[in-house]
Image (cartoon, rainbow, N blue to C red; front, side, top):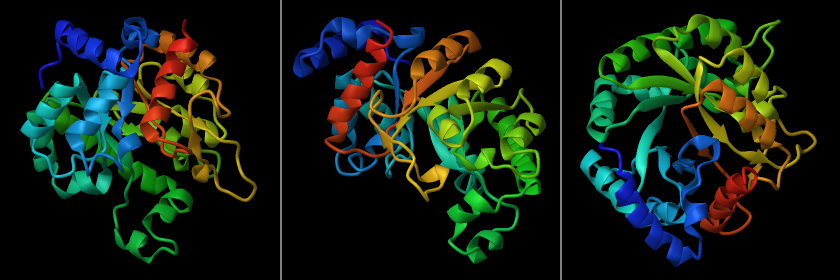
Length: 304
């Protein structure tokens, strides 16, 4: 998809700003010197009922880049039209590894038609699907508690193969973490395997700062030690941990109202050469669009 021109975006943004009572300065300021992005999983409950209208509301807040988490049955042309009307640029899309492997060529064709720059794997898989079907608690429980180093090595191999194929078509392939990647597996972790065994020429990383923090690790350390491996960030805040709950069960909240200090993370991100970053809020106490507006305004406030 052709990128929305600045002139077109300024026109769209000016109308949106007036509608929301936001100043143009707030609309067009870019923390990190990058367009402010939103992972559309944040509005997953709204998109199925009003796809184009929800995207327009996202654009009206001031978000410019978006990352998809499903297209809800829409064709690439329909998605492009809706994005353009909202003043948005769909940079990237998330797929589980299982969904990617079901139809690699079909997913690649869709991504090319849409004009995606990135396709990101958002959850791992295993060589033998029976492991998932038979595991107590199901597939996600296995990902959280059962994945072995050999499982991660298999995933790394799949990512290299997919990355090579996607790169040949001009699309960057990457992986987005949760918390299970950082589980100790005898002195090593799944993320260690991915960093070691994936080829940087074919596989980039999208670092979810919220989940890294929930897992007891420091996003700044990864940004500092592996700047060439990380292209994109997910920005989410988390409520305090609850006793007896696993790291992956932490609940997200409005940026600035949780437990994560993003100022030093952004300082490290500037030095690391991050290409894109996306707000992701997965749970809401109030109106989702209002809270996503608060997320957007927080990001600008800490950089003013």
